Amino acid sequence: MMGIHYWRNSARNSAKSYRCFSSKLGFGVVPVNGHVRYTWKRGEGWDQGQVFSSPYINLHANAGALHYGLAVFEGLKAFQAKDGNHYICNPFVNARRMRTGARRLVMPEVPEELFVSAVSEAVSLNREFIPDYVSRGSLYIRPLLFASGPMLPLKPAEQFSFIVTVTPVGNYFGSSAGEITAAVVDLDRAAPRGTGAVKAAGNYASDMFGLNLAKTQYGCDTTLYLDAQENRFIEEFSVANFVGIKNGIYVTPNTPSVLPSITNEMLMKLAEDEGIPVQRRPIDFSEEIQDFSEVAGSGTAVVLSPIKSIRHNDTTYEFESLNILGKLRDRLVRIQRGEEKDVFNWMHPVPTQETNVESDPEGVLRRMLCAVSSDQFNDSEKDTQFNECAVKSVYDQLAGYYQKAGGDRVVAAAHCSSLLLNFLPVSRRGRVLDAGAGTGEAGSMLKAAGVRHLTAYDLSDNMLDHARKRGVYNNLVQGCLPDCPFEDAAFDAVVCAGCLAPGHASPATYAEFCRIVRPGGLVAFSIPEAYLEAAEGLSHKFAIETLERVGTWEKVFEETRSYFDDVEAMYYVFKRLDSSPQLHRGEEDFVNECRDSFYVFP
Image 1 (cartoon, one colour):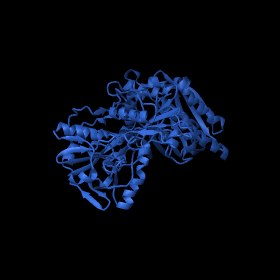
Image 2 (image 1 turned 30 degrees about the horizontal axis):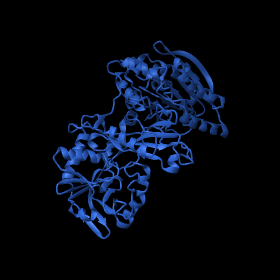
Image 3 (image 1 turned 180 degrees about the horizontal axis):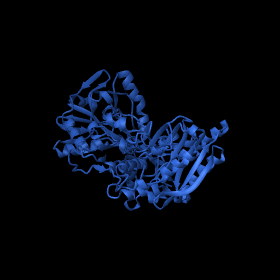
Image 4 (image 1 turned 90 degrees about the vertical axis):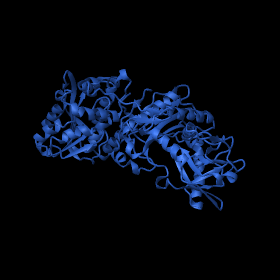
């Protein structure tokens, strides 16, 4: 797998509702954990790639994609199979098709290995958003290559970006999927020697007017285009290839101005495998359309959507329900979902993260808590890099092995709690946040010392389940630092032990703590000493010192003490200061700077 730098996810999104109710999903953008992004620069080539949690991209106002439409994209899907594993459908073919589009628009080609690696990484990052097998939904994957560098004269850009986004989806046409109507519009989608055969963004922009016309003037769901030269031969539907059954033969247009659908290619192969004749040829609309018994639109987004009728001027042609095409579609779906053997090698498995929690829980816990760099945190021997979803998965597994892993020897929670209680007046022991609560050891100590209202906040649901059993927390909230779903000045104090390490909470966490702690309140936390002194820990040190320098908090206490066995940590207690409006604005700017600039895996 290609190397990727991970940026801390500042706004984790819950996938539970989408997995439980994914059968109700339509075809739209859903908030997920993040996306993968690579950058190409002239003279340098492609970088190592990064993962971003924010769905937004900063672009130069003169970016080539904005002004000249220099963009090509792909569409493919990931599925949960019957065996519970996840698979991506035919990514290598999509990689080749994008390279063809890049050459047509004079853009740098995305190497096949990079393309498939980026797609796999985006799916792994958002694995929990893949609709489950029972729902029959899928994870739609959208790779996009575009000119992100500035362009004024029309010439090849100096910088391009390749990103991969994902979103859980249901049917493209929603509730009308069983009765799609189409209208032939008097417009041209692509010229014979234009860019119709590649997945250029501009091709879809030109369809917007025709699609609107089909809906408003004819009351139809989608468009059907005829060729631009003679306005006679069928080209394609709005976002799908035309597929039909005529006299038992599978027929689809042969035209150089239409994007070859990968789904259509697979269906044709299935048809041939079952002895159904396949013809890829020009289709004269006026002469032949009435002879088709079945008609459908074929593409990744729609798979194979039955066309109930096609309207041309004042004539409406109606078609039967899918029979032959329906059986081909069902077989393809069975292959995609692991219900039938994939003899064509279309399905690409999504790599799983191996953590060895069961065989070596102590080793895993030590690596999670005591790594001093991303190289140590990641499993370099297995080329495994932990993103936030993987970290959550490891802690979910560790929750059941915590004592066996040596969790009782992790003294950070006890030390942080003791320090907080030493400096926190009894009058301020009202509302305390246990950030990264784990199994709830800190909460037990704080509750015993008279803290009246405790909130546990942790990435792992299973860890929170163990913390809940202690019966000391008033609230338990699942989420990811540095993003806290709490109001400003909501707490008298925060305690955080074990979360400030490679692969865990980013340096933006300190500013977030200052936001949610009342003036005069305290923040007690620990950081492994070796990590803080290492190159990757400098961003934490910078964040801590910057907040102190601008007057957001002041240091009350600092010491070096045991953390886990022979590993030592730096323990701090900071007091939140009263801030002027000017300082408060500075804090907000600092939070935003941290979110944009600090990363976990340099």
